[in-house]
Image 1 (cartoon, helix red, strand yellow):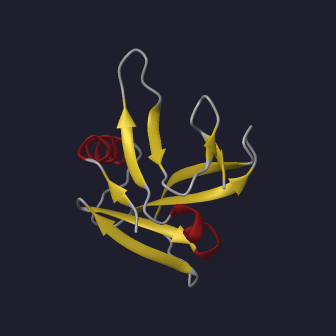
Image 2 (tube, helix red, strand yellow):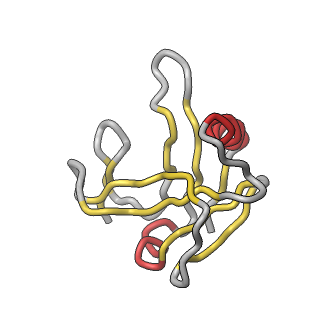
Length: 109
C-alpha cells in the first residue's frame, strides 16, 4: 500500500488539472527503475490506462497504480510533497530503502 500525504494530494490534484487529468478518472502511476546514484530510482507519472499486472490502491482520494515488479520495493511508502525555496518536489518516504542518495531520488535495498 502507498500512502499519500495531504500536501502531496493537493499538489497532485493541481498538477493533474494543469495536464488535463482528474483524480476521478485518472491515476498516479508510481514505479521503480534501475538507475540513479544508489542503484534504483523512483518514477511518478499521470496515467489513464491500467494494465493487467498493475496493483491499484487509493489513499486520500488519490488512486495509485503500481506495476507488479515495482510493488515489492514500494510497500509501506508514503508519497510526500516538499515545496518552497529548498523543496525537493515529490518525496518517497520508503521504509524498505536501506540507503538513499543525497538528493533522495534514488535508493538501494
